[in-house]
Length: 143
Image 1 (cartoon, one colour):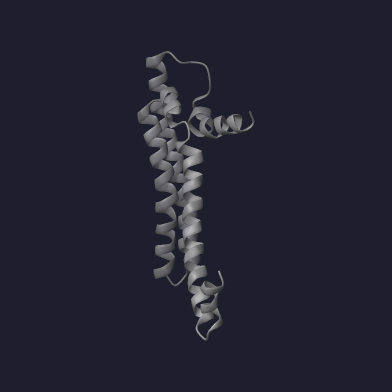
Image 2 (tube, one colour):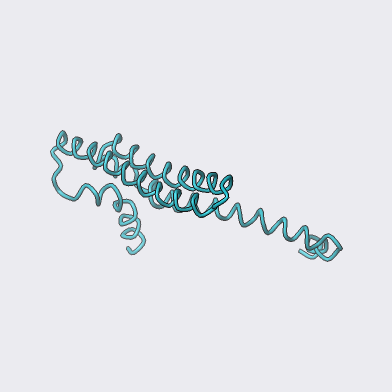
């Protein structure tokens, strides 16, 4: 530890520390995003897909990915090239729920058809679409 931190004591140490701090923060944001993705969508995905159908699961998962990746990029891109940055921020914040809700409504239609074909009538479609994985993880952790 001493030899590694010795480089930060030189004249360029603050620059090196700032560079390392920046890249660690960026990577930790990415790791946090992947953890939320895996807990919220990947955990027990097979069981969820059996309840709502693979087409509905893929549509819901895709709408979540698109809304969380495209809306901020679009908003930040428009804000970067505009004189008024708040326009891009507002546009990104407006597009995100529209993309997500549109995908959820589309996937609920697929899930409703799958349930009619399978004869499943035991629970809510929106619960199975949005909360089944997280509630299953919470139940498994509390055992």
